[in-house]
Length: 497
Image 1 (cartoon, rainbow, N blue to C red):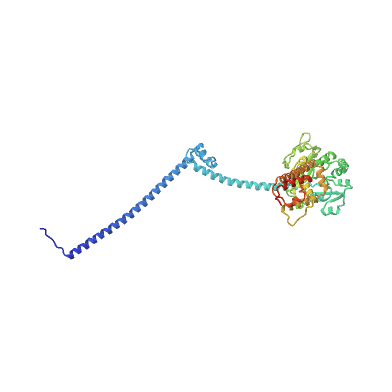
Image 2: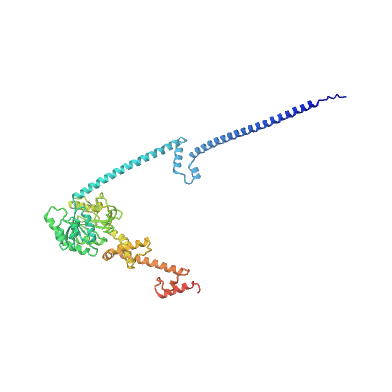
């Protein structure tokens, strides 16, 4: 029979408390171990992630370096496949790398570019110094030229002391002695300018002033008669100078300033003695446009005859600028001449002509060497058409309005500028320029073409027109029958009443 042990109640409760406490301790330890393991695992995972990222970055860096190295050694075919238009610097680096055969050429390329940039900066500074030196040299040359010009001032005679004659004489007086002549008595005005006035009725006294240059500043219409009236007196003055002896240039330099060029050129060549040098010019400005100075205003000229030699006008083109270094020229027979030929008259004549041209140059004019034929061709499509349009618009009686646009103000200014000049000038531009009639015909054709386009568009227009179009002739139809046909055609598209 089994023996039964009786455990007191207090002992049994104490044992139960111990077991419960033990289980609690186990649960707490397990919980702590779990937390510890969890945190440890998280830390390990974090470290592992950082390590993987670091390794990945390292591999990426190595891969990028490898790709860059390979891109330098790419051949032309592979570079063209990657880009149709590779950058020039990249191509240069690739070629230099290929020539060296290693990546060590890249630093040398960068160093070379830095050196080039440095050299470029130094080069620019050096060029600026040269530019400043040239500017000082040019200023010194101009000063020396002015000294030479003033050391032998010209005596300039002006035939025609009207508005334009007074305009140029006032400037000439700053560079030399000026003698003027005209039909009207301008003694008071001449004295106010500091110039000498001689009546036109006494040409012998005018020429007796020892003139180096004679500027014929009369109208186009009176140019021929004026030159003819002076020819005999000029010839007599030349003979007087020759008898006196010691005169290198017996004849004066004769200059025209007309707005047409072929006409005065031919007149001077036909009428003047061979001892007279000829210079054909056209100042492309006047008292209004040049009232504030002549700076940057065009001055067109042709050296026509020097020491009896007629210069071939085809050797002077519109783009040829005045050059003191161009000593050679071709005459009308094809002969080549030089200003330093064994002729004192030729050398003195060239010097006199250059001195006169230097006056315009020193006043700031833009010197344009051009043949008379080229001048007239260009002038017909610029100067003459400007006067033509101004006269046409002036005939319409245009007047300012309260709502003028800037464009219309320009039109009014054009009308005022062109109509201020005498009609004789406008007629002279037409009569003595063989290209003027062609310009008028082209303008007429252009006008008819514009009107024809308006008529064509009016016939094709299907929209409703204003009511006044049905009340009067539109102005584009030449006859009433044509206007009626146009009106009937338009009536088809009008809405019913």
